[in-house]
Image (cartoon, rainbow, N blue to C red):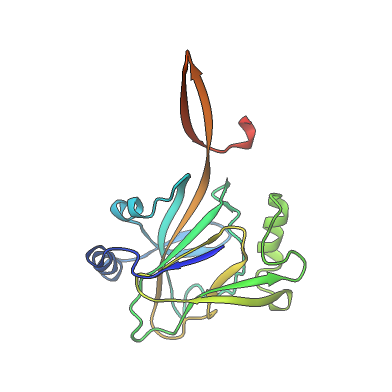
Length: 205
């Protein structure tokens, strides 16, 4: 699933978000596996990114330029912060003037195909550590170009990366959001059914 929506945020809200990104200092966040230049996503924007039957598990704004975030890093988003992710979104923010044409490229792995179907974290981690930088293991497929206020939503299992690998001119700025799935548990109290939405956790079902 790949879905693109242009002019996603109201114009006034997007301009405020864009100004926030250009007028604040991004901080390095080191996950141990990768370093990111990040800003927190404003709460009022997080609220506008909510999707039916999901919870937002993580959202942040990231930046790449010719001296930072230069890895190929083809990956899937199956697990983010140890949570099983079902969907991810990218909101493109940077102004196009003076910035290398960029976007998001999707890939097919020569063994696993275009999606990582396995929920095995060892397979996921192996792909990140041993395959994500090896171009010969991948076949380039669809790509979505950056455009201010364009929202890309995709299945978290799909292999992808930013393109191009190195942003030679200017800075690429995107807001990324990850979603976990909710499930419905029917709680029967007397003769009434209460529908309770809770995130899926395999340890309790």
